[in-house]
Image 1 (cartoon, rainbow, N blue to C red):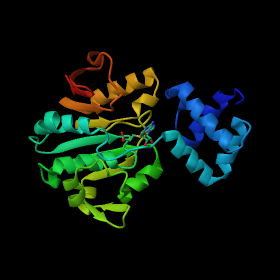
Image 2 (cartoon, rainbow, N blue to C red):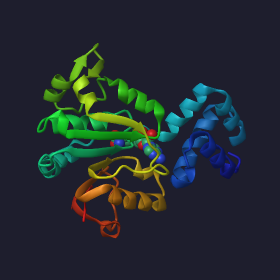
Image 3 (tube, rainbow, N blue to C red):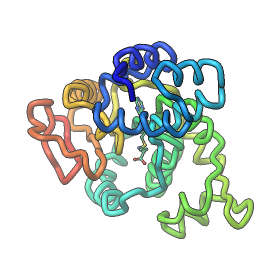
Length: 257
Ligand SMILES: C[S@@+](CC[C@H](N)C(=O)[O-])C[C@H]1O[C@@H](n2cnc3c(N)ncnc32)[C@H](O)[C@@H]1O
């Protein structure tokens, strides 16, 4: 692809508010170049014109760019650590405020809600679930999932919180929806919620540059209450968490000092 990637990044920022400078360049550029070639465009400028004039292509591009794979109970061993080491302290609180950041299609915040509802009534739970991508948030709000997304979920939870619509389609219960507020939010530019007891941010930081990540860790620290927990994805360990005001409590779980 011709080397006018700088121009492309500026155009994409204006069109989508996604700042590609904060994403690891080699990886992101490779993905974008593949998509552009697939759309038979010969230059970044031609592709920009295409997504400016074709709404469907624009949405397809954003979905492709944001890489929104998710599933319920993703990496079950980590959910076990959450359940054994973090939930016991959380449920002692009179009200529990959680942020599922970059929640994609909602599998993660709904998993959190199911776990907490085992121990506390819905009135004590508030989960803010955010993502940069409007399309995934619409899916999350609809609460419709296929059998593949919920395959990892323990059976008792599947039975309790899902209505089977067809052999492959499942609808989450209205009860689960009640404790989650889905909102559009860009981790790289929007203000962060505060007074949080837990932040769950998994499988997004791997796409960001070291500089962007370091900025996000600092903001996460400021958003959490003292002693509250940051839960990251299984490949997203923080090197020297002390520099951001965290101590490690287990792999991928960090406590605000
Ligand atoms: C791979 S999914 C992770 C979903 C879920 N957390 C999980 O682990 O299953 C990554 C999500 O990050 C979102 N994302 C990418 N850049 C973002 C940004 N700057 N701000 C907020 N969300 C972003 C994408 O839209 C996508 O839904």
